[in-house]
Amino acid sequence: MQRKTATLCLVIFVWWTLNGLATGAEWMTMLDAAGHQVSWSKAMPASVIGAWGWMPLTLGLVWLVRRYPVEHGRIARALAIQAAAVALIVVLRAIYIYGLDGWLHWYDAPPTFSEVLLQSVWNNLFQAWLIIGVAHALLLSERVRERERQTITLQSQLADARLSALASQLNPHFLFNALNSIAELVHRDADAADRMIVGLSALLRSSLEKAGTQVVALQEELRLLGYYLDIEKIRLGDRLHVDWSVAPDTLAALVPPLLLQPLVENSVRHGISRRVTPGRIVISARREMHQLVLEVLDDGGDVGIRTSGNGVGLATTRARLECLYGDAFGLELIQAAQAGTIARLTLPFHALEAAA
Image (spheres, rainbow, N blue to C red):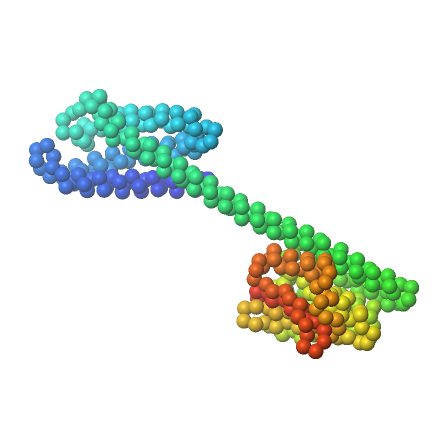
């Protein structure tokens, strides 16, 4: 606030100083009552000091406009106060000029106060109202900028809240699916169920450590995905094989946490689990110019099976990506060349140097 006031005072000082210099230069082109050209020593002090007299008055009008702006519901009151202030300024300017005229000689002959007051009406009435108009324009501009800042802040908070809500929706979804997998093995293979519980505990612990984090390094995301795949390997046994094809220069790329898990889960549920023979999932990551391309390929099921329902995983993933990247991402399910499906994600490539 103090900085803003200091800036305003500086602007007012510079404006009226330049105004005084410009007026003085104009006076120097004129002739006085004796027919002589007005000298610099007479024109400049008179014009600059006359202009400087407006500085406290300008500051007062700006304060008055901020205190009593013309706005809906208070128009009459604000105009009455400002009109009274303008009348006061006309009188104060007359007193100022009349008091200093003996030294600066604005008039060729000593004037009466009534003459100075009448001239002040002509010279200063419009000037005062012009300053009030400019002060209102500045006030409205500040309010617009403040509203824009508030809008940006609210939009950011809304996006964060939506991302948190989506993440809170995704975590229980994954947890319930994992618990269902454990429940399938409890009575059939207690040792395997026990290993799944240990893996789930490690996964949940890592997930909770990243709570509230909107992006993580791909290296961390792959580590969390590994926990999930360990659980599914225990459940499916030899029916699930996983291959990794991750370019080293992508490990530091920033991605939303639990981004790949819904895509891999989709492949497991609709691709591998439906097979009676062993199936394969390939997880790949590569950089293409300024984009990060992530793919999850499986060799079972077709695209129609993946898109026929309203699964929480894929829908939530798409909604999270829209919050983070707007239109600057791609998420598509593609029929593989031979058999199976490819889930392809394309994101802007942003790297965390420390993650490398």
